[in-house]
Length: 287
Image 1 (cartoon, rainbow, N blue to C red):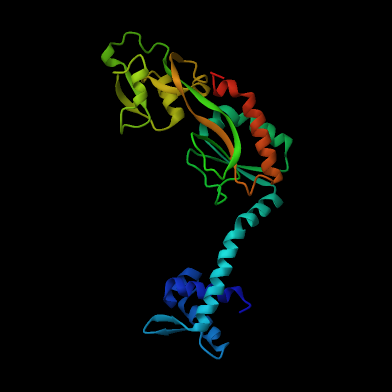
Image 2: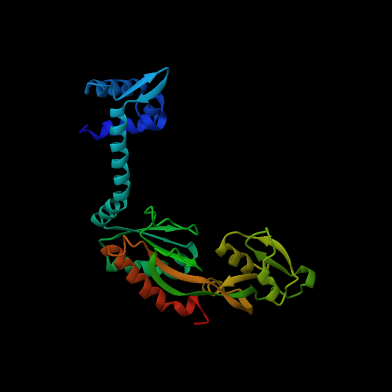
């Protein structure tokens, strides 16, 4: 059993419990699996695995070899993150995951400077509000707004994201009270923060799931929003008609402990921290 393909064959047979199922898992045809199993059985004085009435049965030797295969697979899975890190470092790549609005309004221009400083590094950006899984190497560095983090992650807290209440500068002109309305993210429940606004009883006539498009809708005069200062300042038609006593979650720059010593990761984190701390007064007006 010096061929890894033989161990993969045993793992596929154990998982599928049929020759055809194992063939599907391995991406080969049924005949190939049968031929490889017959060859494996002939290699020893006793059969490794046999088929009886379309059911697979592992001999004691087969079970021992299967345990070895499972141990090899487990060890490989443990080593994969480090292997992937080595490949990325060798190919000079680093993966960044961050919210689209942070990329658009805070970092887009600055990242051109990162490219100039480190032309040898290929920066791969995943702009998403979903939480990238650092354990599974979905990203090397993550910018995330969060109240609480997983204990094992390492990173740097920047600042909270300050909020305000915004409307088009002419929104209240020639509008009766019954025509004043809010734009919110979801229609599932009336947001509790409405109670602290100057218009707590105004209706909700529009929901817009996308954060930036909510600001755009308010700038177009479609209603009032609770918005982020760093986004609202890019819409000249918006005015802040009331302050918000609370802020959004803290903004963090994070990585996995296994990645924090990688040179490219360290370069990116240092750049992001320097850049975003320089823009902290934009992200958090209360700082």
